[in-house]
Amino acid sequence: MTAIAVENLSKRFGRKQALSGIDLAIAKGEMVALIGASGSGKSTLMRHIAGLERGDGGSLVRILGDIQQKDGRYGADMRALRGRIGVIFQQFNLVARLPVITNVLVGILGRISAWRGTFGVFSKAEKRAAIEALGRVGIPEVAWQRASTLSGGQQQRAAIARTLMQRSEILLADEPIASLDPASARRVMDVLADINRTEGMTVLVSLHQVEYARVYCDRTVALRDGKVVYDGPSDALSDSFLTELYGAASEELVLPQKLPVRPAAADPATKADAHAGRHVDEKTKTFEPA
Amino acid sequence: MSTTSETLAHAAPDAATRAQLAGINAGRDWSRTLWNFVILAGLIAALAISWGPAEMGQWTFLFTDSANMVEYASGFLRPDFTDGAYYVHEMIVTVEIALWGTFLSLIVSIPFGILCAHNMVPWWVLHPCRRLMDFFRAIHEVVWAVLFVVAVGLGPFAGVMALFVHNTGIMAKLFSEAVESIDPRPVEGIRSTGATRIQEVVFGVIPQVLPLWVSYTLYRLETNVRTATILGVIGAGGIGQVLFESVRGFYYPQSSAILIIIVATVVLTDLLSQQLRKFVT
Image (tube, one colour):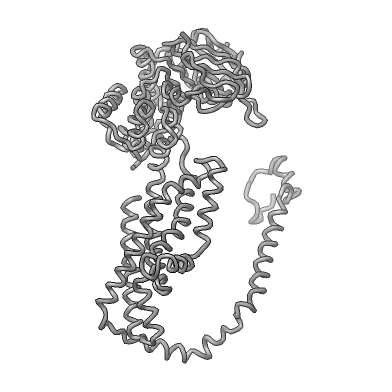
């Protein structure tokens, strides 16, 4: 059964054609990478599949067999459908001032009665489930800390815990590692791969760097100027093929210093050097006060 | 190469720099400069026209008739606290008026703060709500108090209602401005879980604006304590009424005592609310 079926999806923002005639089908249980240079339409496509944006006329998006949007109109039960799709974002999109556990608990808003959700009345069992979800991503101890006190990698994992709490069947990850240092990026990707494998959750992850796609995803979809230019096995995406697809823009898609194909075998020192700047950022973020 | 003080770079300027040097003002937006002059000229003209009607020519009286002021002020030099307990009691009534007025407007400003924010509601909700708040705000507390005195009679309750209505107009505007400057991404995060619109507000918007809202509310409480004193003058109860009666009866020592109590209370509320605001932000 197809989890995500996109047919002829187009979107124009003013003069810019952000997406044009996208066709994409992703089966249940797949983990697919979506790559492309900045401005190629990755985020726009993600936002349409998540039901946060509506396409132009002629577009059709089906989620788990139900119509999510057609001709720029949302389907009948949009809210319920949003609940079945978990989304994580590049900037984590957690509510900074709320404790982590509340940020995770909002995942069940789509499943519990509207009144109970609105007044934030969560049962003990639900709180236990939230802590278990945090344990699943490896940060159970931060449950009562404010989300703003977490490092970027921890925030992203808390966001993943929220989608686990949501019991979503599809996980959309929009550039989940673009603002993380390499070590945190790897942990987040490991968690995503693990959820895909053990829970059978369908994962669509947009990535800036093709190295991660090769390591974690069997299938890669490549976008350029709002069109699908490649859809097939990630192994086939050699650097020379990328240059063929993107020309000069392909430099952006490859790490400046080569990651070995299997990250476990990598020498951590060289990678830390290659990303020294970002690594420092990550550290200062950790110590940011509430 | 010349070594005048204006020369910054040691290397010869490149082609693009030379081109800009040739016509220093090339690409400059003259309309901005012109507008600045027009606005300045308009301001000066407005001040000149208003001189006569505002009777600004009488400024010399401040010095020639200063003896009158000294005589008037000397009556205030010996404050009379014989009725001190009564004044303090009325002062407390004034603070209580301000407290209830602020509380009621806080309750109403929470929904209206959301409904008046352009990033929360469609225009056909936004504009009616904003115009209603404009209306509340445009009419001064004193005018509202006069209206409510007619409706509910003389006394503190008219003061509470006057503060409530006017202050709602102000607080809803302040609240909505805070809502308009939130980060939309966490709200989108909440929306992506399948939450309702109200849940988006409760979990995504309110936590972001809460410190500002608390701060605004305390600031308005401060202001309302000051305003509530004035409201007494037009019969809405509290210390203002007592003050007005004693000034009209030429009881300057008593008036002086009342003023001292008012100033002390205002300073006290300011200090208290400052401490509270520090605590929440």
